[in-house]
Length: 257
Ligand code: MN
Image 1 (cartoon, rainbow, N blue to C red):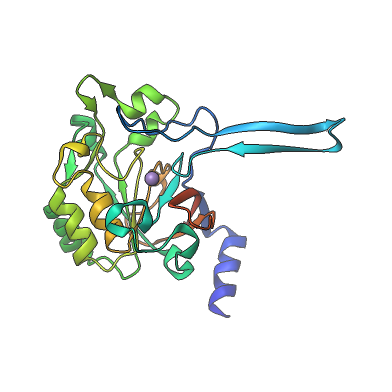
Image 2 (image 1 turned 45 degrees about the vertical axis):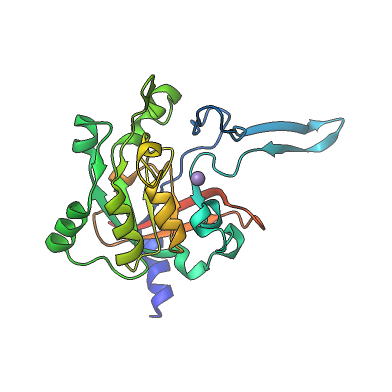
């Protein structure tokens, strides 16, 4: 049997299952809120053009309005100043959008401390325990934050000292960007940096180092708890917006039962 037929017959028999890692996209989807004086993107919305009525008697269709970085979405290198001469979202190599998924679980740490930062030693310990990260892998960081996806306040966890959501140390961002031969990372939070990462140096270090190193970031993932720590395959499908700095993205995983 050919390799691809093997996958297809496994899907047909149910020994390989497709898990959707994408949050539903609607006007209620929680989105990043930048403080003054920075400008924010518009939230997602649907605008009815016809609904089997006079403007279109046999069909229903909508206009959509959305920022690029809304809901489950990808950050392309040109999103950040460090990647400004890099690829836009339409230029991402499709071969890097399909690869091994490695799940790292920090849900206990994030439950104990919403400002928890993943550090280099966590990645080294993981690689020592379960083997090195494969080339072209996507590192998917589980923090349990997807449980708040229906609740903007809880998802952003804002108070007068900022947003309290887990992320990465400066050193960890640099290590992932410069030392690992991976394609990208995925997180469950609204952004690929911690809620209070604007106070780090450089500000928002995961954005700075990852996108500057031609690696990609996905936010607002869900269902990572349905993936094994090793052995799943991820399929990342951003809209190929020409000149786009990111795009809403359907993210699927193939998981062996
Ligand atoms: Mn983004």
